[in-house]
Length: 440
Ligand SMILES: NC(=O)c1ccc[n+]([C@@H]2O[C@H](COP(=O)([O-])OP(=O)(O)OC[C@H]3O[C@@H](n4cnc5c(N)ncnc54)[C@H](O)[C@@H]3O)[C@@H](O)[C@H]2O)c1
Image (cartoon, rainbow, N blue to C red; front, side, top):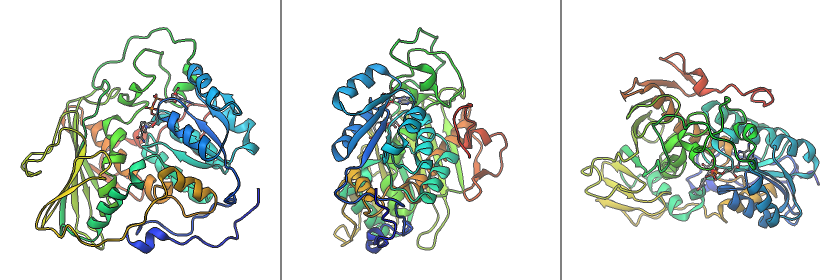
């Protein structure tokens, strides 16, 4: 593969047009493919969302390896990718095929994102990883650092980031059409999986599932029906609850438009939980400090049937998922998973002209970046990492809110530390089981 590190620095299209103001310039793949070369892809987790991620990887590149711990899913995917080698352990796949792989997609349960993605990126592989970027805050910071150090093309799977509606909404917020913004409210109809209960009783593990590999870096526990597939979302060891599942979508537009990162405090009210399963519902308040172009503001998250007060939304519906941004001139209301459709209520210049960069498509942004194009919008160091850190901070507040209102968690975003409560270190930074590497 030719070394193309001396090619011109890429033009910061997003920075030039206004909404990419926090996208640092000059990230370039050390070894990028030429536009005509096929990117040699490997996919980790090829069932569920991994089915479409591996489909994208295989259609836009050449699939050389697939990995899944469920052999029935793996064999089914093998028929879609007859030329690909099959694995049930991503460590083996990466070690054996290091020289044959350029880029990796990761679509596993949340707790396995960082172990797989970090190993791949440390080997210099470009990475597309599902949302939330990681299971813990420390992993999100580390993923960004490794991606930057290795100059890799990276993209998180919050596909709304590429939608013109989301980018326009963000650009309008950035253009201050609402005047001074004081509050953001975000809600979801999740969880649509069990949360707030006790562990299911152990059951025999089906022969097609490699349970130790599925557990991966998580603490040991016996197999039971109710984790794989999909329902792992409700368990602290594997998922990130309703917040982690949806906020990288529903918070994304206000995050882009209002630069909602590095909150200084977070506080939750919950239905109560046993620190094994997430609560049935939670309401979480994030406080963001003022920055050089907008005042401080608060964001409130609602899940499990909780909703913002109808009066705040001027009577609008909050039964699905969506967000509302309240400014001195009125309200932006978006009853949409991605913030890509919205309306304004109040004396607002709805026709304000704003520029925002058009995307060739979320996955294409990543493939183009591997071939020397601009870094994708939801790249790990500048966008997806800080978004995931912010969102997962909400789960720290949920952790301390055993029932009812929890203590306010005061946060030092630079040092990645809780300032006022001890004992949360393992929620911020996990301990991997032996055989898997977090820090090197
Ligand atoms: N962007 C989106 O709209 C969207 C939608 C759904 C899910 N997701 C994300 O995709 C990820 C997967 O969610 P899902 O609903 O597909 O879950 P799932 O449980 O249905 O599928 C996960 C797949 O990964 C496999 N797997 C588990 N551990 C593995 C390991 N260690 N190595 C290799 N394969 C492994 C499983 O066997 C399964 O095939 C999550 O992070 C989720 O948040 C994103």
